[in-house]
Structure formats: structure tokens, C-alpha cells
Image 1 (cartoon, rainbow, N blue to C red):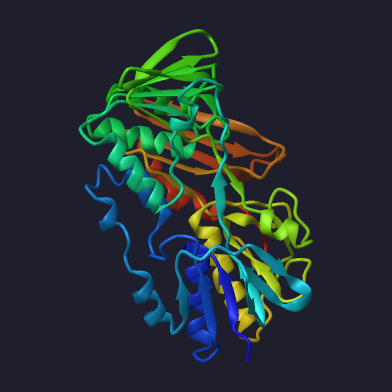
Image 2: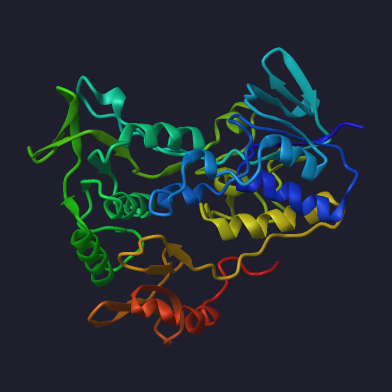
Length: 383
């Protein structure tokens, strides 16, 4: 019998395998990992400095330990070169691995906006444990960092770096941190709290060039300003990995398009996690992965189960300014109602009937999460 094959060993790949093993102890299972195959939580990478975790201490299990736990074959450092849905096959160079069902848990890659300059190639990004190990080596000794992007990951890295003694400059074309997630009042509080920690903001401009300046890097901004830093880190966002699926003829849009059963347009091929688009939703957060993993595992075990997403507030790991967000659905009609007092901003997005559709809580207002979250509509209601 051909195995169930999972491409990807991140939270999505390993969690669907774990959930499947709760329901089916015997199905042959193969997990293909492009990296070392360790089990770890990628969100931990953006606050590992302050938590005093070295790269080698971040994984909770090795590839060998995961193989034993899951009664699976785990193949680290194995890059899939093609998917052949008509043959139920996965190509790994000259090898073809036949599957009964295929799970795409490919994740998302860093969006790269390459600047000009003779050191453009030196701009780092962190999207996995290998990347993080290289970044930690580059910043050893308290080196300064120019960070491109003031989104969620950029803000988390800025807090982590500044809190551990690094000089941090953050550049973003927007006018505030978390521009897509926070209304201006909440963005201003986050900006000010991180500035008090030592972060220098450069809003309303982008990075034009990165050039060598002796042992350092000179970052030239679009407004003509220059920053000299030891390291440049890009954190401008993530893009679902769709290349393999698209080359195989699967339907893709922003992500690999799947239905509520997480099935792609190819028979016996499913997708979940950061690479998947479910009814127009691409949700690169932990909780959607957990809900999708449970639903897909049930389907694989013989009980067809549609995925559903409740309201899933997201904790932004910026201890200098605790922040929890549950953004309204894209295009939702309503307005922000803002309550601000001292180190607290409570932003509620309500519709014309006064129904709560989303919130953003900063500082002391985060204590209201438990009260507000049950009032939110589901992100994707049960089928």
C-alpha cells in the first residue's frame, strides 16, 4: 500500500501527522522535509533572544525523534522537485515516490524586495531554523541591525533585538507599525513603547540601496537618509509557496486553492497551513493550522470533515507593548471605536448595529481579550 506523503515538516505538516496518528495508528506515513526535519515552533524565532534560547535549543524534537513518535518515515534535507498527480507520484530528483494521498504543507517564503547596491546580497531574512542560526551568528557581539518592515514579524524582531541591547533601526513605507492590523491610536502606542526601548523608526520611506561601508553596511533610504548598520534583516512579509502546485497543474491564487475539506483541484491531494487558500482566506497564524490539521486528519482517517475557523485572536510578541489583534474580515462594513487611557488602547471594530466584528488591544487593554473574543463572529463558520 502506498503511503500518505506529507511535504513539509513545519507546524502544519507535523501537526496533521500527529492528529492522524490519534485516529489511525497503522497508515503508512512519509514526511519529506527540505530542512533538518526538527520539530519547533517557527513563531519562537522572533523572540528567542530575550528568552535566551540558542538556535540549537529551539527544536523540541529531532527528525529521528519525530519519526519514532509518529511511526513514520521522516526524510530530512529532501527537496521535492515535482508532483505528478496523474501518477500519484512525487519526484525527488530521479526518484519517484508513489502516494495514496498527498498533503502539501509547504508553508510560505519570505517576500524579498532586493535593493540596489553592492551589498544587496548581504540582506538576511529569517524563515526557518537554518536562517535563524545564520542570523544569530551575524549579530553576535551586540551588533546593530537595520530591519526592513514594520509588520508583525518585524515588530517582534525589533522588540527582541532592542530588549537584548542591539541598536535597531526599522524602515517601512507605511506611517506606523502594524499598518494593516492596528488603527492609528494603537499603532502610535506600539511605536512609542518600542521607541522607548531603543527602536528608531523610519516611516514613509523604503530601502533603496545597501552598500558596503568598511566592515558595516550603508543602507540608503528612498528619502536620501543613510543608516550604517552591521546587519540588515528583511521582514516585509510572507508569500505562500505555490510553485510546486502550480507546476503540477493545481489551481492556485494567492495560495494553493482548496475547498472546505482542504482538497486541491487534484484527486487525493490536500493542502493546509501557510501555503493554502481556503475560500479566499490565507491565514499565516498558528491557530488556523491547528484547526485545519484536526479537520484534515479526520478526513484522512475516513470521516470527511470540513474545516471551520472560530475567531482566533493573535498575540503579537512585543512585551514592550503587549498587543492582541483579531482583525475584522476584509471588506467588513463598520468603524473603529477607540478608547485610550495612559498605556492602554482598546480599539473595537463594530458594524452599524453595534455588533463586534474585530478588535485590537494594546497595553493594559489586552486583559479584555477573554471578555471580547466570544463576542466575535467565526472567521469561517461550520459548514
